[in-house]
Image 1: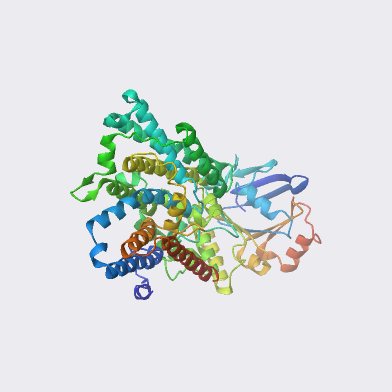
Image 2: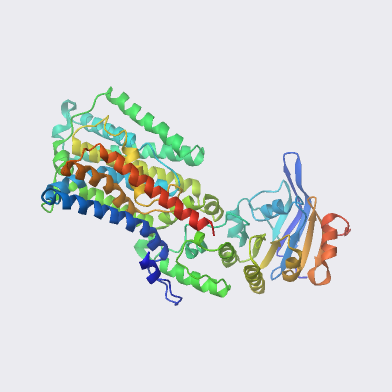
Length: 347
Length: 254
């Protein structure tokens, strides 16, 4: 906290460019970033040869890309003091509708040789599928006033069930080669995986939207004090619907990315994506009580479980320790958040 | 007295079988502080809600500048220049004072970025600083979330937010209830400054010395009706309390 003291606000007339709020918010982010760096340093010290390799970096980033896209949407939802448990199922559902439509548009129902026209339609289908679930969540939460935990628990089950109905319970395994070799496993600039570039772009746009626009400001306001936001004339209901819609669209995009990477709809592999995304967001300093959070924190928060996983493999620790280690860091992060709130509200 | 800026005539409001307002009338002129007092259950809060658009009366009419208006929502009232300071839940504690001041009225950047929704934070902070100093709201820092400020400072920001945007009428529901002595005086100073700018201020308060010190007039509500009107300079604590409890009734008040 020494930096905060050193930068105590001065009472001059020129507005400071970076408000303390951001600096305080990023103080949480700062600590968790240090944790991440420390983890990497410890793993690197134990096994310097294996940790800092291009391959490790690439695989860690790729494996985190899809989750990061989910977590960006989740950050918005949690800042409104909501939650979205449905993201993993919506991801699967969107991948399925996308794959099925691409197959239906291809000769013999096999899209392996499909061109970019078909792939573009597939992308749109994935986004629209995600948007539909997001819209449904948003309307039930904001208009029908059903608690988000229940609404999205419902759509968590329903989206996966709907996907399984569409495929008869088995994965769709025909994915256009052109998609799999570019977005799925291709790289740009020699070494940067395309999947990672897409996730980075989504993250950057998300950070811009949350941090600098009216949409972002209202997201904080609704989460901070919904009644006050309503009283100042903010269309709270509409804003909440839009936030859940955004999260749904991002889950749809994540489904498309997952499809490109795995070349299958991975029906059974996303049942804990929602919890992983929430853990990443909360680790990154976003408060479950709403009103506080940042995308940059979410990026750091999402990488902590990923680095733990990778690091345990590399240094030869049983990987079953990973969820336990994540749980400890997660509970500690929420505990700090609550202590901070108590300190503030006691004034 | 000049012609009233905001006028309510015979408002009636039922909540089920409960009659909260039974033909209540009220008026306030520009550049005047009128206190609305009454015992608990007299209908003050309901009255203010009807006049600020939060509730709609079952019957009666509301006139602004002599013309009948329908205040179907707080947004409509605000668009007509009527702002309200609430006792509670008025601010977003995680946002800083400037963000709270401009909440719902954010300034955007010029050009393409503004069209995309990007905020002009620097300009909002500059103006917020100017408005706070104009209204005498002293904050050690404009950079902290408002939840980190003291209760009095939080309320000062809430008061400032309403008066900055009000062009005609400000309603204040117990704006000083949670404040210390010094902060209370500051808020009262703000009220006087606002009045001197020609805005009508309607104050609800249980604090009679405060009512007498800041108001130009006092209107008394009892059992959903106006029962008395006083000029603050010509009345006394005893008279106010008498009117509130029903011991004193003015025949022409309703």
